Image: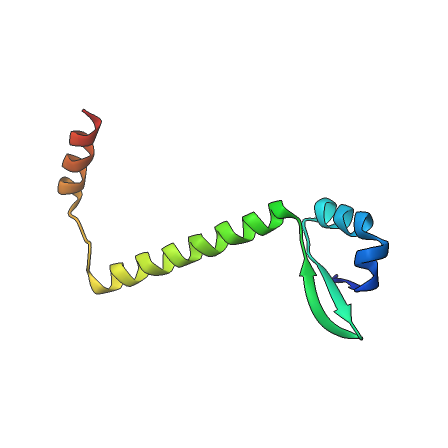
Length: 87
């Protein structure tokens, strides 16, 4: 369930918000005048989300390459490349 807090909690309960973010690895949604305004999350959760997004971008690029046939390498050629790099 989403954790939603008023913006005053950033000032009055910052340590509690930090603890919640770290313990749950979930964001805390901050409202201002009853409307959504900010999202607060731990640095670790943010980095994990960024890594996941980067992976999705790379997977999308790989799927596009596979569908178009660009960058395709025969198995034998790939093995030769790998062997030459290893020594």
